[in-house]
Amino acid sequence: MKKTFLLICLAAGLLSCTKELTPQEEAPAGVPMNFEINIAGTKAGKTAWAENDVVYVFFNGLGEKYLKLTYDGSTWDNSSEGGTLMDTDFATLENNTLTAVHIPVPVNVFPGKTMGDFYINYEEDAAPFTYYFFDAQKAYSVDGTTVTASISLRKPEGFVLFHIPGIEVSAYRFRSPQMWAGGCSAVSADGRVRTIYSENPNVTIRGIAEGDGGTFAGWLDTDGSDFTFTLEGPTDTYTYTCSDKQFEEGKLYNFPVLTNTNWTVTTTTYPYVDLDLPSGRMWATMNVGASTPEEYGDYFAWAETAPKETYAWSTLAYWNPTTGKPTYYTGISSSHLMDVDDAAWVNWGDDWRMPTKEDWQELLDNCIKIPVYSSDGTSVNGLMFLSESDPTKSIFLPANGLKNDESLQGVGTNGYYWSSGLNTETPGQAYQMNFTVGKGTATHKVEARARYTGCAVRPVK
Image 1 (cartoon, helix red, strand yellow):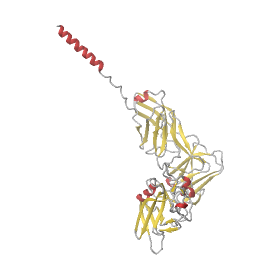
Image 2: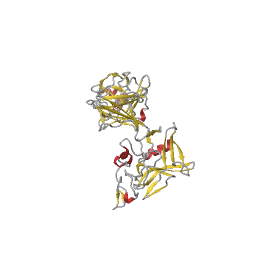
Image 3: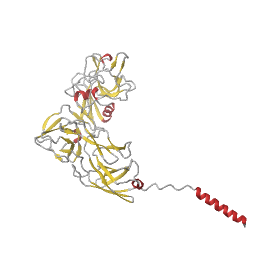
Image 4: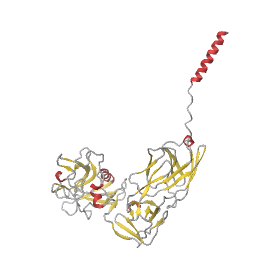
């Protein structure tokens, strides 16, 4: 009997120890949230939301998570970015306020070093200076796993919008000497929207497709009375002058169609073509130094901005005669030209630059290429690039040859065009696109060439 009792006690003791040593269950990870966020059906400067419009919602103090709302034409689909938004996230917040931002061009959003700061990174070829709509420090409620809020978006103070009907907005650039450009750059942890500004007025502004045309926006010097607006297109530039006009911030103003006599029309100084490339890059129709598409234009050594008589290592800018090596861009991180050494930027203005080697490759990969060649000199030989989607859009690159020392070589059969890219493995070379044309044939490639040689420059914007 005693033995049985002892065994029972021992078993009970072991059970007790087992229970004490059992690890505690982990706390629940939380439950995904549901969102019932009402966004006004209209917004300033636009009659209605369009399919694929996006509104970013940042819950102030939440950390690295935010909500992305995408309009599908009738309702707003939501997705949690930076991780799933859980009920445990909202349980730790002291006050329930949010900041919402709509930016009408493609962007990437990423958290900064400070918890709760989110930075806006404009995707390549999107307009970094553009208008945006926002609603800041807006209260919301949390009931279990449901967040409810109502958002009414507005333009930031000082913004004035201008709508021009009947234009393909991607082909036009807008400016005014009384206009400063700006755009959203970040949302801080306490819900403040930060704005980047252009450093000077008269900066070129890329428009946003709206309705039957495009909308352009910026801050205006509202103390002025005579305003001049310039709209530069591929072949024509339009100028509109408003006398004794006061513009009010927060308003949208409609310009007349371009055929209206209030627009003054001149020929665009440097015509360009939209070849419907994936990047949206616009290509000039002529070389720097040329006045027609068929002219060869000037010849430049790489990183030089003016033509010269002799093209040799000894005459190259950034050449070190002591070491016998090029001194420019060696030992630093950048592999591309700075503006002050870009022949397109210096000669044509800040809307233009030399193509990158990737720009040249994109042109070769996405256009129909037609050799233009006559052995008797009845035409200017070269290579024609036609848009694959619209062959009426084209640019012509003449077979300009290249300058070596004081001689011109390969004219009529070869074309040589610089890119802005340095060959970092061999810094005495930079990348260029070259081609050879014959009767019904053409070869073309992007490769490195000695920087001292004289090649053409075909700008892009």
